Length: 611
Image (cartoon, rainbow, N blue to C red; front, top):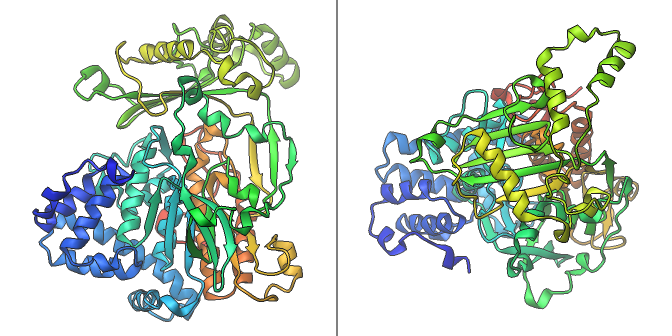
């Protein structure tokens, strides 16, 4: 199925010179084409035997490409990756040799160790999920010399959404080759962003160059201890066998949260004994050994539930998000002139005056597509302007004159606009957000009409086409979940899955048979406030933090890895994320205490404000 998605002419590539094949690798835009062209490139360089062999491949590939006639511009990607690699190897050397060995010598040592397949040392990692955070985590682990396999349910890069970067996150992407893969990327300015698919393309390519592996259209269906290591059982994803209706596509994002929507407080999950006994499908699944399992499945993660990660759930008043993805016709001058922008309703510069929907936040980003995100209410809010002004004077002693007239006008305008019920998007008020967002209650035709009204007033042509993937989506983001602990220890005897406290009490090193660690990252570890853009800007940090814990588990002990994971997550919780210049997506990291990017490495103390 994966091979059927290849669009490049593989036969023609085999007759091209290496620099031209390398250029094609940098420019292709799908997972299938990326793998196909990469395989041709390695065959032409006679390095196919090193495919997926970690840093052994990167060192050999860098040398071979250097002799193949690449021009200076083409070589920039390899120079950037090598610089990033040496920075990571500096961290390895600090732990392994107390910083007394030069990074280049540490790298040579890491390459030699990578070739010792039968050593049995803690070094194999399976990453479940190839979203931006999963792939970023995989790249960091690969830079540290781990043997990494990424397993992704989707058969391709299908997500059309565009994500906003803080300065530091954009610099991180540049260090991993983003500008080489996307020469038109604008890394400066107020609105720094990339499409989700573009981020995945970039990180997958760098992962392959660094010697990592990735499987698409596959899912982890069970875990089980083997004779020397734990094993992950991988099978074709059941998700790819279902055809969705328009209504199901509109609420796809929402449905991933439905299991947890009725929880407020602590969601206690029990270990699924079938899952940690192989998932019941060993005969039809392929087994892959691992020492660490990175869970990057998003906020709806099955693996965190099955491994008994309890979650702290916060519930808020229901409020809904609308995401619109439209195709970008670069030949249309009207579309070319559109500028990315972010608005808050009471800022005085609200652009939606004719569109009937009532909204309090609007983000428009132009990348390879047009992307809109709005925050909208279920029903119209009546005009309470006078009551608000009176309360402001009574409770805060602020004069009505202190509030700009444009803000007062916007409050009154909002009372004349419509919520999702008045727009007919919801057929009935069924109560909670979860209850309203069932496919039978969502009028997709009216949802698309709402989307077109927004796009039209923002300046797009009336005939602009929606993207085939994720055209218009609607969801309730009135809840946030966070794993209570950031790590689980997988054992071969006694209780199979231990939380950190139980692991400490058991003596940490006691027991026989193979052990492994399970680390959630990104939204699987902690879900963001949707409007603050933390999914990737905070998510990258969680992936790098867990990679550092994995490094300590390899270089020191399993107990060191567990303690580091807990300490880093404790600090992540203490940071006032989202306190940027405006608190909204795109407003930057503000004064939360992130250190300058030039000092960043895998160790969270180089990036986060540790006390």
